[in-house]
Amino acid sequence: MHEAMSDEALMLAYREGDAGAFEALYRRWRSRLYRYLLRQCGNAAQADELFQDIWLKVVNARRGYGVAAKFSTWLFRIAHNRLIDHYRARGRAEIASFDDDPDDADAVAALPAPARERPEALLERKALAAELVRQVEALPAAQRETFLLSEEGELTLEEIAAATGVSRETAKSRLRYALNKLRAGLKESR
Amino acid sequence: MTDELHDERLSRLYREGAAGEPPPALDAAILAAARAAVVPAPRRRPGWRAWMLPMSLAATLVLTVSLTLVVQQEQEQERVGAEAPPSAPPSATPSKPAEAAKAEAAAPAVRQQKAATAIEQKAAAPSSGLEREEVRRQAEPLARPAATGAPAAPAVAAPPPAPAAADVLESRAKAVAPLRKEAARAAVVRPPEQWLEEIRQLKNRGKEKEAAESLAAFRQAYPDYRLPEELR
Image 1 (cartoon, each protein chain N blue to C red):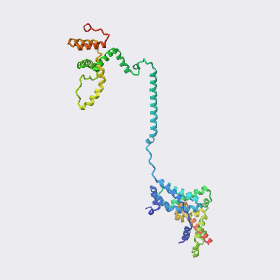
Image 2 (cartoon, chains in turn blue, purple; image 1 turned 90 degrees about the horizontal axis):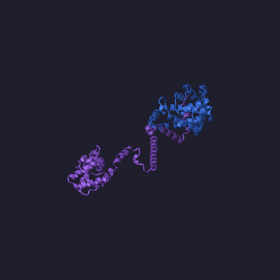
Image 3 (cartoon, rainbow over the protein chains, first blue to last red; image 1 turned 120 degrees about the horizontal axis):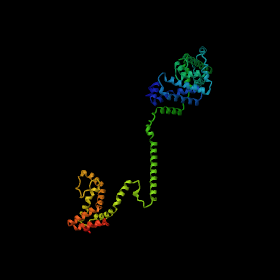
Image 4 (tube, rainbow over the protein chains, first blue to last red; image 1 turned 180 degrees about the vertical axis):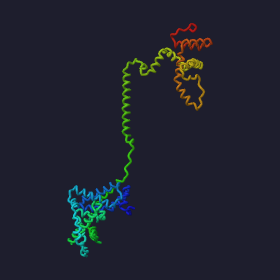
């Protein structure tokens, strides 16, 4: 029954006391949220702690939940805020990168698009995927978050902007810059 | 599909390389917390029930202390009573005015009671029907004034009461029983002049034997009374 329900309907059902609805919702989003956190902080123990905190915030916020946006936008908005708190508590440099985000869209647009995959590249696919993950983790925090929200959260630009509290144009610039940087990095590694 | 903001091949490559799952223990903890959050809280007990235990304990304490004080007071009274002189009449205690008044009223008739005891012993086991009739006859006229307003005791056995009134009559008879005994005692302690007049009437009617028995009883009751000449 829960499988056919939308994320928002599941959350509303949980708000009304249906614990099974929460479990279905959790199963849908647990891996994506966890990978988002793992890529962002690069540490499994910290990712575990943040992951638990975020889901408990969801549990405790159930009474005030309303369908003002997609559930995933709401979930990653909570995750984003928790991550910012985490950075502030630890004094990490990532917090600064959210402020001095380069917005030179023209420069990154000039980067070459990825070449078509060659047959021999498929043999190296696994190693290449691992290299891509490493490059994602090496992105500046704001760009990395935007990329992960797009990939893991499957959020649109508008939703990314809403989750991270920036304008749509800023979100668009971050995502474009992240993609171009990843393409360039992959080209160099081949 | 590849555009400025979405690279399908890059996304596929990322998904192939991206790994990471939350540990099962973390899953279990989060789901348990989520379930616990929606379990209805147990209903609180009414406020008065919260006071049941302390109130019970307080009542038990008060009862225990009261009983202890009462027992101590009674033991103290018994000890004081045991230390008092044995010649002191217990009925003279000011705490029992009713008994004192009763004893006071009984004091002038001590001599009469001595005679009454003798006659009662005789009346308790009359040797013949005549004697029994005489005792009854002597007791009857004086029993009524001695009852002081209480229902007069029937001189002869009343017919069996109706079953419906049996309980009422039984309870009334129980209430009258002590009065009846008192009346019998009063009958034998009637004034000497009246008693002697009765003896004279017996003699006049020719009942010499009954007159002699009544006179003997009179002498026992009033051994110091000076008999008239005709009865000596």
